[in-house]
Every structure is written in C-alpha cells, then in structure tokens.
Image (cartoon, rainbow, N blue to C red; front, side):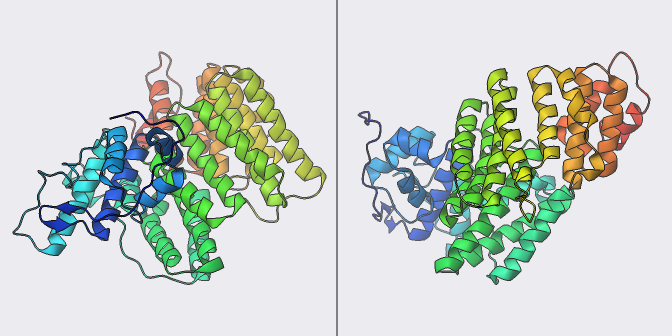
Length: 450
C-alpha cells in the first residue's frame, strides 16, 4: 500500500458492501463504526490523530464512527491497518460468514458483540466482563464500558428533567458517592443521548452539552479508579462538547481528556491541549469562561510537574493563581460552582501542594497545606483531595504518622476515596514499612488492604 501524504484528505462515502450474498446495512455500519471508535480509543488516539495517520479529516472519521458514512474498500483498509483490526474478525472479510440458523435479532446481537470484542482486542483490551461474577456485579468501569459500546434504549425527556438528573449525578460526584454515581451513569447517559437524538436546533445543542457533561462525570469516575475506559469516555465528552458549541463545556471536556493523556504518558500533548484551550477561554466573554481557563492552567501545571518540568509547572501555576486573583479582585467570581472543580484561592493552594510533591520538593508545599482550612473547601470530594494531597506530601517527607492522619481524615470526609487504587497502594506501603504507625493496621483492614 502506498504511503499517503500528511494532510491529504480522501473522499469517504457511503457504499453498500456485499458480504456472503447480502448487503451491509446501515445498522451494521453503525456497529462497524463502534468497533473503529473502540479500537481508536483503546489505542489512545483522537479522531484528529487517526485522521492524520490515515490521510483523512477528523470530521470524516467522526462520521464513519457515527455510522453516517461508509468508507469505500480502500479507505476502510487504511483505517483498519492503522488500528490493527482485521476485516475477517469484523465480519466483513470474504471468508467471514454468520451462522444461518439464528434469528435476525440473534444475528444482530452476535455481530455487535463480535465487533466490540474485535475493536477492543486490537489494543489488548476487553469490552466485555471477564467472568459471570463480573457481569452479575459490574463495577463502575464495566458499567461505563456498557454505556460506551452497548447502550440501553431510553425514552427522551425534557431538557429540564435532563438538567435535574445531571445535577443529581454531579452532586453524587462532589459528595464522593462514587458507587451511587456508577450505578446512575448508564441510565443518565442513555437518557441524555436519546434526548439529544430527539431534539433539533438550539435544543439539540443544549442536549449535546448535557451529554458532554455526563461523559465528563463518567471520565472523572474512571480516573478515580485508574481505569482505561477513561480515554474513550473523555473522547465522547469532547465530541459532544464540540457539537454543543459551548466553549465552557469544551473546556471541561478538554480538561478530563488531558488528564487521560497524562495518565497515558503523553504529558506534552496534554499540556499543549490545556494551554490552547485555556488561552481561547481566557480571551472570551464571561466570568465562567475565565474561571474554567484558570482550572485548565492548574491541571496543566500539575501535568508538567508529573513530567518533572519544573519551570513550566511553576509558570503555569503562577498564571493560574494570577487568573484566580483577578477574578477575586474584580469581585467577578462565578455565581455558581464550576462543574467538577472551582477557580478559587483554596483550589490553587491544593494544586500547589500537588505540584510541589510531584516535583520532589514537598517541603515547599507545606505553607499551602498549613493555610488551607479543609472545612471551607466546597465539597466532600475537594476536602478528600486535600487529605489525599497532604498524605502524599507527608509520605514524601518521610512522616508516616502524619501520612496516616491525612488518610484517616480523607476516610472521615469521603469513605469511598480511600478505597481508590492509589490510596490503597499508599496504605499498603505504610502497612509494610519497617516502622509500624498507630492506626495503619486498622485503616488497612477497613479499606480492604489487609
């Protein structure tokens, strides 16, 4: 196959494909699009990156994944080659046939699951529960995977009802009730997407924003559990946010996508995304836009710190702190809280603690920890973040007693927070340290570490 020049855009058009004497329907094309999307997300690629690799526009890839366009044979061959898919495993190769003794509905279910498995398997992941027990008692990641690739049908509701449901889900996140949020998300996502699909005009744009924010919550939840499904969830969030045309929602979605990029060891790309988005929002009208820009700069600073880019981290935090200060000085603080984080002095102090710990200078985070009053932080999730950041800071300073005290504080304000993988690992490290600290064995027992 000849190499394609970078930036070349090939025509992608719908064309029915004959397979085993039949024609690939639009329903099957949508399923093929789902497999392509799942493989792309599992490989940590954006639509723009896949498009660049294949010589297509990002919008063309988006339409293919949505099942709105069917690529010609040579176009499809380029896509599956880049993603490491096989036409035969997708049921589209000449040798691939479906059983003749199944009903149309059964055939559809079989093909859908075949496509989903093939898409995730291309990157070494699985879209389906590994065991019957996992299927019977799905965790948050399994539920999000189901919402991503096998959504349930739902009845559209009014935008007012959808807004109330989204607010309730956001409250579960800010209260650190992650199990409740995980149980509610599939229904919320299904309802939001059904409502969007049934809407038109401005109402459809508003519904896109609700869909985006529901996926932001799904991404936040997946990030709490260090789950790989955070990437495809963030991808869905950004796509819906862009369709909404709302720059604030786009900023919220860009933030969670950048965090997944950092977790995938792509800090430079994450910082670039955050800087560009913050720059756009910072120049726009409205206090909320500037507040979101400040939160993006904080996230970029922490990302730079994790990559040991000290100068960048400190410069970005200084810019974020200045942006927050200008909001306060102008008495222009947003009337309502931002979606999952806030642009406040206390929020900046939390990030300073995390930035200095990640840079290996935890002692420089001590003044910020000392001047923070946890009870004044707006939500249980933020108070738990304070406890988490302090625990890591004290651990790096070698003070195990204060590390345990910070973890116990976190448990008191948000019991589910200390059961996250990262904090369980920290608790285990304390449990098996040469010197036993009072309270650590009991904490380990309560959180399932021992």
